[in-house]
Image 1 (tube, rainbow over the protein chains, first blue to last red):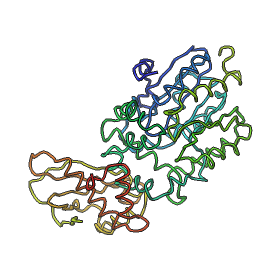
Image 2: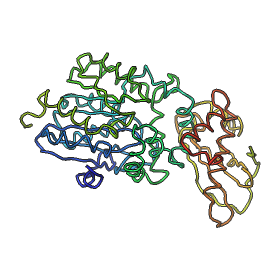
Image 3: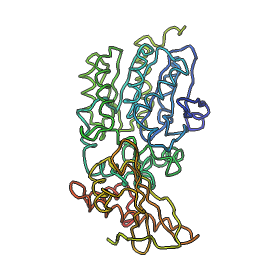
Length: 304
Length: 129
């Protein structure tokens, strides 16, 4: 699916006072798959995962998180708390009256999507996670390092490097895919084009500041604690997919931790991919998701 | 490094916002350094602080937010003369020098080497590129 056909199937809705853009395709009475992206991508990152899901008869919904993609880009710092982003997904679920949802979460799609799932657990049918987390500890080695991660998000440095000088999405994503040449020549511009101005890129440096790495200064520590307790109690069919080359959320720590939390989970399915694994293995991920949905009866019958 | 703190704003300059930081205390040591160097402990609402970087001027506006330690936020304005256009590349270089001054002042575990290497990795170090 190219950018044009992806965007052609999007529309927007107002949620919590913001304009949210979302892709929506497939039978309205089919089980919905909610594909949730992270920082600094947008729904477009899921484009190659979508065809196998539609072929399996599912409805596919892909929001651009507020602050990214074709959704509104609020400039207010307060708009971008983790609670607000999770609440935006809750509002979307309510607005579209979604039920029997298969949540698929990558990167910040995890903390936000799983937060929304916990708030609407009766509307949920299954979960898939990839290159994401939902707890305070362990935190990623990558996020604890002064060079480059903590320096990159330090006061004034973050707004300069990521906002003014647009290190994300371009260079930052380029460094976190496997086939860099393909990304550079075919895709990178579509991530840069939707965040053209300094103020549009606010969430690229503000969101990472919610990652818990220091108990005395964490701004979202309580949220992650609540999240971890909540996900531990989930008994839904679960699927773990991970990029073999993931340098941000090391598979031997993070994918393994998901398996500890959900021993019943299907996986770990390893695919070729770094943190933005959909760029390298989009179709393969789509096939894994579709087969999982079929195995768990999500493609059978229609919702009432 | 050629960053110098001035006592007064030169006349005939206009303000152009060039960098906004809504959370100076994200790492508290950064806020502590700014409080100390600009003497913000006892006089929050004094005149804006001005830095001269090379031959250009930059104004620091410290912002308070209810319920948070002062300063909560910081806006940096470039101060070009009259109606003259802002030189964006010069501003990038000057801001980078301000960042180097900041990191050197805050000190360990933060370091100029890490800042420069981060800039190099992401190809945003204007003094190198």
